[in-house]
Each structure stands twice: as structure tokens, then as C-alpha cells.
Image 1 (cartoon, rainbow, N blue to C red):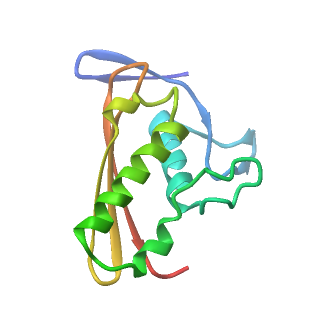
Image 2 (image 1 turned 120 degrees about the vertical axis):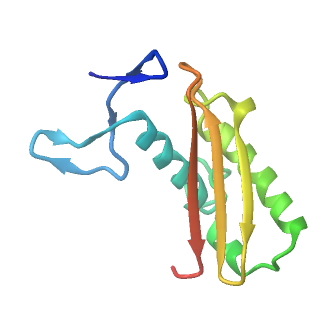
Length: 135
């Protein structure tokens, strides 16, 4: 188990199975907590609703939004949908009250910034994602 020191606090950083799953010499490759949560966020962002058979409500399907009109109303609707989807998917890992999503874009790309606080240790992180129209 790896230990990290951050601002005078000891953070326990247990190993997680790496996303996407990769098998190395010693078995499944491992990731730290930050990489694990980022992988979960990526799953929500890039999975289309209805894509998972037993969880049809899972996912935000953001790639389809790249070609939508670039308006603040669309960004607000997307932001609310993302916060809801992320709160459900990250339950237990992240304090749902602390999830903050900023959505912006230009003619070709979406920019998603997700900030959150890890539930068990109170450590705040920020992840940034760029989504373009290429599939």
C-alpha cells in the first residue's frame, strides 16, 4: 500500500484496478485513487445512455453534444446532467455535494472541468477533459 504526504496530512492511497483493464506481468495493472476516479469520470462522459444493458441510465454521451449549438443554455443543461450522472457513478468515492462541473466549448470542441472532494479523506481534485468531434 502506498502512502502519500499532502499538506501535513497522511493520505492512504489504496491500489485500484487500472481502467481500462490491462494485464501485466504480475496480473492486473494497478492505479492510484486519482487515476481510478478519473477513469470513472471518463466512463460517465463517454458512455451513451442506453449503451449498458443492465444500467441504461448510466452515462452522459458527451460526444453527441459536440455538434449542438454553442449556447449557454445548452451548457447549463449539460452541466446539470453531468453533475447528476457523476454523483450517481462516483457514490462512495466522492462527496456528491462537492461536485462542480464547468462546461464550455468552441466550434469544434467541448471543454469539461470536473472538481470534486474525495469523500473519505477530504482531498479536493480537479480533472479537465477535451472532447472533439472525432470518433
